[in-house]
Amino acid sequence: MSNNNRVIIRLVSTKNTGHFYTSFKNRTRQPKLNIMKYDPIVGKHVLYVEKKDR
Image 1 (cartoon, helix red, strand yellow):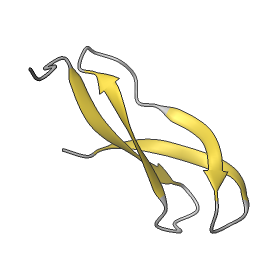
Image 2 (cartoon, helix red, strand yellow):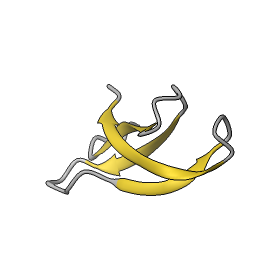
Image 3 (tube, rainbow, N blue to C red):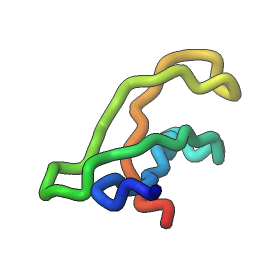
């Protein structure tokens, strides 16, 4: 059975390296995610912002 209350999101690097992470988020009204994560292309932690994947 599919879980309809979750949506796939893409966390995109703000350094414009093209690197991204994918994650799940509840479909309810929530603010966009902004997370500090490791960007292997730059070699340090940078801010990742949410973009809708599907």
